[in-house]
Image (cartoon, rainbow, N blue to C red; front, side, top):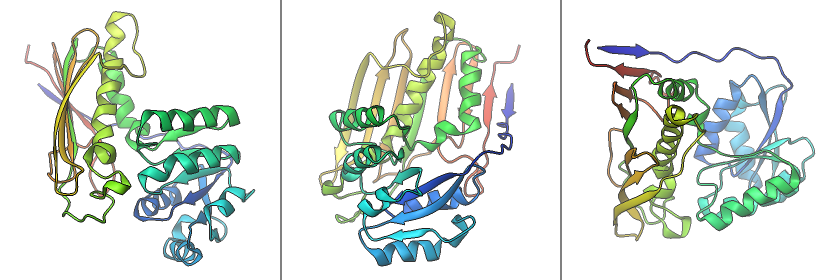
Amino acid sequence: MTTSLTSAQPASTSTRQLRWGILGPGNIARAFSIGLANSLTGSLVAVGSRDQGKAERFISDNRGAAKGGTPTAHGSYEELLADTEVDAVYISTPHPQHPRWAIAAARAGKHLLVEKPIAVNRAAAMAVLDAARAADVFAMEAYMYRCHPQTAKLFELIADGAIGRVVGVQASFAFASPVNPDSRAYARSLAGGGILDVGGYPVSMARLIAGASMAADGGARPFAEPTNVASAGFLGETGVDDWAVCSLTFEGGLTAHVSTGVGLGDVNTVKVYGGGGYLEVPNPWLPSRDDRPAGLVLHRPRP
């Protein structure tokens, strides 16, 4: 028996607009600005770049993101962080620069949304979180799928036992990109490779599902940490991971198999297997975007 479950849409709310500044106006920041244009709670008020002209061009090319006025263009990141009109900063510089500017933004009293990965190692990530705590500002790594109603519904179904005890997860996020040693995906100096670019998605999802599955053992958790990790990968000609796979074992025996890469495409789905059926997430990472629908499919054995 197969049932399609479409996630509910969030209700409209009326609140004060959170005033956003973009630090690092690249292609990913452009996608963020498009989303912000349709936000009920946020508006773009400033853009900061190391090149004044680039900030101005970004604003000109994305006029739809502004609400009630033209955003201010700043010719340095420092100027953006000093802007008293900015409440929160979206940081979308190359990976290695995230900690420096996240810490600087926290110290300037700005709330933080930092593109993934928040840092390229644990020590730098903890430094960002410590700075946010010290400044009493909100900090979040930009895994947007975690905020979607589809993901909330997936967590709810697992925690409620819709497929019984969860025993396995399969999750992938990989794409095939032409090799370019200077590109963000392949340059070692920019922390290229699949693991840091999109590998965090399936790992994050596996931890979320493992946490939800603990409902039967005393209560669901927001996430769970694996007790064992085994991985393998392929280093390409630029020295970054073109492709990687990993098996994670969690408390209770749940096993997750995840895959990622920038040099090889994959189906990019999530499947969660339990004793009473399985859940399929056909579009886990970009639901409701690019005309791709959101929704879950519940498979159960016929009675």
